[in-house]
Amino acid sequence: MSQTKSLKDLKRPDLFQQKGCIAEEWVDAASGKTFDVYDPATLDKLATIPEMGREDTDKAIRAAHDAFQSYKKTTARQRARWLRKWSDLCHEHIDDLALILCLENGKTLTEAKGEVIYSASFLEWFSGEAERIHGEVVPSSNLNQRILTFKQPLGVAACLAPWNFPIAMITRKVGAALAAGCTTVWKPAGETPLSALAQAVLAQEAGFPKGSINVITTLNTVAEVGQALCESKLVRKLSFTGSTRVGQILASQCSHSLKKLSLELGGNSPFIVFDDAKLETAIEAAIAGKFRNSGQTCVTANRIFVQEGIYDKFTEALSQKIKTLKVGKGTEEGVVIGPLTHERAVEKAMTHINDAKKHGGQVILGGSPYKGEHKGYFLEPTIISGMSKEAITTREETFAPVVALYKFKTEEEVIDLANDCDVGLGSFVITESMPRMWRVAEALEVGMVGINVGVLSAAESPFGGVKGSGYGREGGRQGIEEYLTVKSMLINVTN
Ligand code: SIN
Image (cartoon, rainbow, N blue to C red; front, side):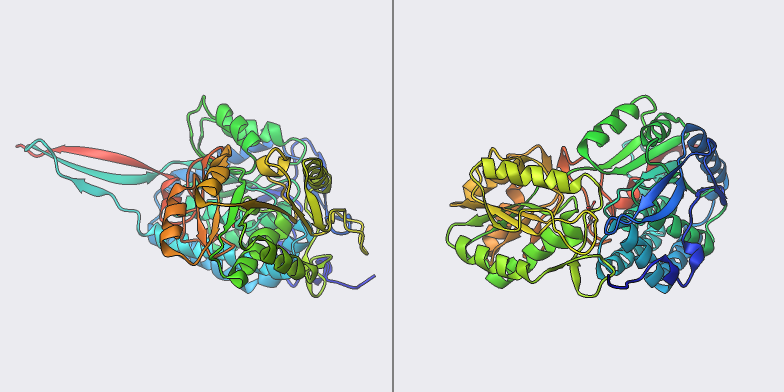
């Protein structure tokens, strides 16, 4: 068995926390219950974490609410400095953060380092945005009045992060919230709480005041914690990244308190390769768009539509490239595809593959669980093509390294196919034609379009979707607005 890095290699062992965090105290669950976190590559136990419930959540909300009373009065410059310092600390401790992330999520160390840099980029971005929160002077229709607006933080923000990008999705939400002047309660995913806990250590080190950062850990009591956050009148904002089904539950639970919501939910991204594409660009983008985080991104290229003139060449070149991608544990040298994070993920992917076969699909590569040196959740990188559009792969995210290929004839046809979908998050268009790029980008019912690229992520670019992919935007100029409310002031100027 190969020797690879483990938690013993952390240079800062205190970044490995096994407790929740309320008002700067590292705490156990009130119930004393715990759950275990496992390495999805080896199934070895990594940590034992508090299984928190409603009582702990209420305490965290109360701590954040108390802290808000003074935090909302801090200057934007001060908040910007704390964010910048936190970002610097992420860079300083990149090796440790990446190792923790790699072990609990399964992604490769190289990808994990990329995610740490991505995570820090949100802190840098929002440190700039903090000082650009502006109101406006509005021309009044009444000569005796002046009108102006200013923006204020909403209050306590609950930030619910997913397991696929546990370190970057925390800062995408929390960075915006803290920049706006909100205090926060974080709820990392039960599969991957360690990255968020490490980030909480660094955020505190950066100087954020007591109670502005609180972390609730939960796996089996997640519904109870979610409900407590949704129903609390003290929580004024909830941001969630995850499935459409859970997003719908949270939205309905938030309806009583009418809190502001951002929901970044499931996707089913079309990846469209036109005949006029450069083959090299198409392959590079498809590999990045499909195999990033072993296919577990909500903008993953889920349906790859290829025009008939380039279909055979594209399929051949893609399978040659995929054959070179090494599968294994993320800490091992040269590995490009790690395990899937979730214990049911391989089973789900196999259901999709078998269903595609029933609908006429042909497995061109892979198609089975990957049997290697480790006993974790591995799947062979797979290409399946030729299934009818009734196959599950057309309607649902597979969230695995499975390429589902579909052939199309015309631009109109592929736009209809791409839009025939209940969700609309990411999309990718590979073409050398500028007019086509505009036409297709405008016609797709999605929140984001990548042209000749396979990754849509940038702190400065708004991220979010339409239809069942939810609402609100994260990152970009828009990201901070989600945590602010506009107040207008009408002034009588007569004596
Ligand atoms: C996600 O999969 O939820 C986020 C991916 C990204 O930010 O690139």
